[in-house]
Amino acid sequence: MRQLSIEELDRVLKGWRGRTVRVAKREQDNWDRVEIDLEDVGYQENERSIDDYVGRHVLQLHGAGTVEPEPGAELSSLPGRALEIPLTADDTYILEDGRLEIWSPRGQYVLEGVAKNPS
Image 1 (cartoon, rainbow, N blue to C red):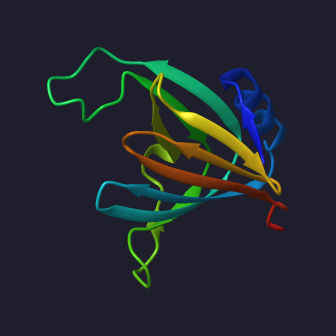
Image 2 (cartoon, rainbow, N blue to C red):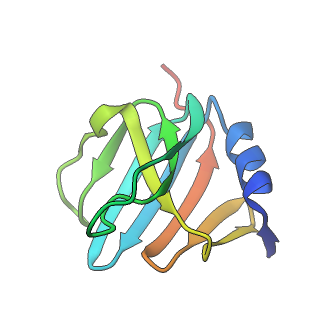
């Protein structure tokens, strides 16, 4: 297990471009599983929102993908061809056994880069 800086997190994610990335996301009482064919990695800075629903800093994983909104639910297309993960100064980034973990006050995200699905 190795704790990463945001720069190291960025390098790992950019190294996964062209691969399928599986993301297990748990935010508050919400659970999602996402698979995305990662094309690019980006970041966005938003205006501060009243309810903090929209993160001030957001990691964006771009590409086509699917979302399973709860265990056993029907898959749907990833909206906007991007998965957004809010980032804060209190986050912890961990690399362990080829998996990335993002721990934040808002939730937990586990990301795993797997071989690209053949077309």
